[in-house]
Image (cartoon, rainbow, N blue to C red; front, side, top):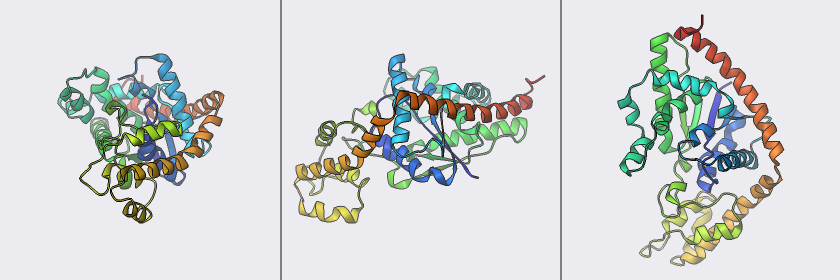
Length: 311
């Protein structure tokens, strides 16, 4: 069966961009594949320095997966840090690629361009992500349009290893869900915690309303494009046509309609999320991580033999 793998970084509270860009596409398709869903907590260390915050974020990420409709008996949900083979394989890949190759990574270049500290973890990030993907002989990786490069790096790592040590890794393909490839934020840019332009996924209705009312609008247009771009994630253009025609130029009315539609979509998930206990999370992560570790250990046994460290 075709194997699908994706991950969510527990670097902060989830927003609707995480949901529509990653969680919902995965929830819509995961039963068609042999599916693996990671909480990529070691990736979060490039930015998170508070252990209490990281633990809470890991907990929230698993609850969010389940609240979004993902059944842990039908997908393997696991914690990256509980499978040590990820970091071991990342080191091997780092020994095969060049510094100039890693310097081309978008996330690294963006940090440098903004004058922010680009730590070594961020620089090597693509090779840890390559290890995440390749350890499990992944066939398909669902990604946003802006994340295609991560899969390209994984393919490059696989080919470099295969060329150096004979055929070992499957070369994965990305699956871009075009309709939600990039979820816009309240300022029209990509929704991101770093831009402070998010709408909280499991926020209260008041919190959602506050975020929606802050959406930047263009007073010159009859239709507020940033509002409409988010609204299209919830309803089809045909469903929205009459609403936007009847409220042409009435931005407040359209924002209020978006608030109601977001609340209708999110409220049942919020209830489900609140019903999931911390013990439920620990059980799901242990069972999933045990299964993932079994696969990863078998793969790394082959890798160690290939590179010559198994005596």
